[in-house]
Image 1 (cartoon, one colour):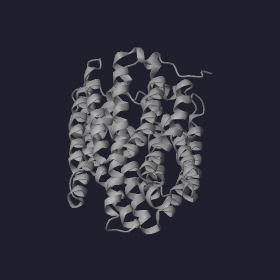
Image 2: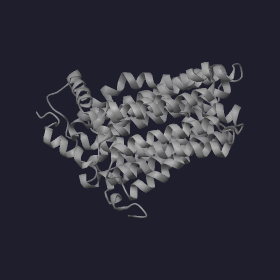
Image 3: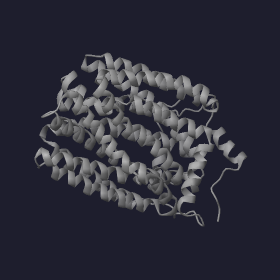
Image 4: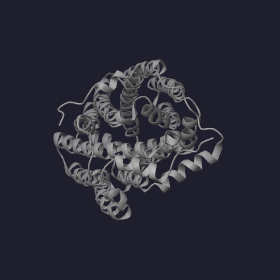
Length: 428
């Protein structure tokens, strides 16, 4: 058993640049989310109740999801047809200008700032419809296939490190004002664009002779025919849709735990702390056996930790409970990402990634909306309890609904199944 993960993966220049850029974007997104969440909730509380202001936070999630739902499938098709590196460069350049819009909005009066923030959230959603498919389908080509588990583990470790530092830094920068957060995030995004642009990537091999909706339908059919992929991503959809507390953290920070913007940053960072610890372990010793039981077990732990957070009245205990949810989610995410990558031929990775991202976005952004609605009618604490209940029910249900997933042992068996069944991308 390794005590530290191998750094050998970074000898590949393309992956090294890609990895750095991805973490910069991850940190930027966390910082921007902190600033947007606190701004919206704080401005709403000037004239609205706690429940109504929590509902406003949910509307931000819905606003981001609408363009994701509309554009993710075309985004996946684009990742299979066009140069994936160029998609990442252009889309993140647009992201930079959206952050500049938020920077400008931070100097306006509340009646104008709120609609501008919602407009920026919509634009961010549109950008996010194209970047995940291009990103997730590019990096498997930057490393040898036998090093893919290490690449996935390092991606997870880096993302959780960024998710840990991003909210903490964003929360403390917010003390000086939202404009400081946006300015810093804009700088990170600009640097990420440079790293993507200078990454050495193999020539793109687009799928030929298949266009338009036929490509999209083919990607959808592939996902729904593969029970391992379908089971893993739908489980994440259900659990995060009902179980995520991210959108409600400003409520807990401001009106329940009374810890302010800097406390919000630490609460947002807590899941990433737990996830980073697990990601470090997985980077050194990737899971290789009983991946199905590990997946379902992690969901049970996630649900129990949600109960702990709901009933906690102490800031540090709340952080611990959130850290446990992050650790459990890290195990789930590592397994889900590994199944999707192993089960998908390169010529379909863009489309399959886009379908997966729609499920993930539905769970995240629509989950934020669900949290806001639940908090509006049940109160924030009961909304979190509901999430914990659903997580436990989902783990029990998927044990029966997807027996192939619950009994999955090795990732190598996924590769063997693809080869044996002949499920490959279409050829010209």
